[in-house]
Image (cartoon, rainbow, N blue to C red; front, side, top):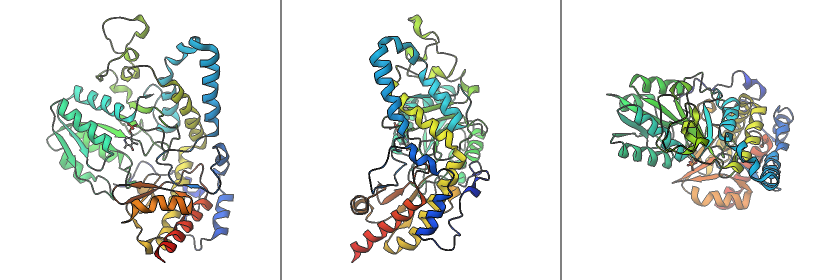
Length: 426
Ligand SMILES: *Cc1c(COP(=O)(O)O)cnc(C)c1O
């Protein structure tokens, strides 16, 4: 599917059209770096070990320098010095961090987002909420991240629903025609990733929702590879439900709590099955009977991971400060540069682009197929000092994080990988 909702809104002009540049040499890329309006953000991250190039931002985003101070202040100051006195301030932390995410990276309204649990658990809660609300099938796709498939087929089993699997081309992502067929006769829930974890294909949020809504279904988006990589407009596009990881492009750190979004108009009619005191409308009254809170809190269960929430905040603020439109504009320029260099330097050695070739039709990463991908990824790390991701069975994922990666880094990485392949084949 192509995108209509996530253009860069004129911010393309901030960066060169790398696909049309006449020559690309070290001088050219250094000029691009010198003119980069986001260049200063590089120093806001903990420095990378000398000589390493990180092109794996889709796995675990880099450490923002402010994060270590924020977590240290929380551990020593709040926990160490103020002890239990600080505890009540943490009761609404999932919501406060959720509000920040809503405004900085999701295009949602305050009160529609919490940061809690992990993506799998949030998928379970919101998928169940949809099935408790309406009859019909669960529609999912077979190229989605495995946890999504496990949770959704498990829910279908638990609630006695049909699970309809869209067979997706792993390079192109699910197509609207396929979805139209899958929802025929009605459905309760359609759940897809906005950006495919494999190919990077970007789904058309508006088109998917139109098809699903016409069939009576709610749409549950997994934003794991979208959030922090491109501007989102959940409210403006009328998104129903969403979940997603915050430790990938969003740089929230290992174990960062996942996001959970529910459109405000749906709060009063949806309930989730994992009841706990954090979802109670009168949490501290310690009552025996359960009454869900009227707000987004009804989707919470128990004590939040306070340390991880503290680590997530500086990252969300950093991305918000840079602005997702600018981040997206630089991201498409960086992936476009890698794509162009790879076509010239790496394709003779068996690298095949396995995802959309138009940067506007994908998220923040590029995927290549190579029949020796599994062996090449560690070899590239060891000999070239370039970190990319391996994905089964034969994929290599390349994700240059826009705030911490220079054009020079991408140029250098492509050439170093080329040298490794050349040595290898000699
Ligand atoms: C990374 C990722 C997850 C991770 O789920 P957790 O439960 O947070 O471990 C889920 N779905 C998708 C699409 C992902 O990319």
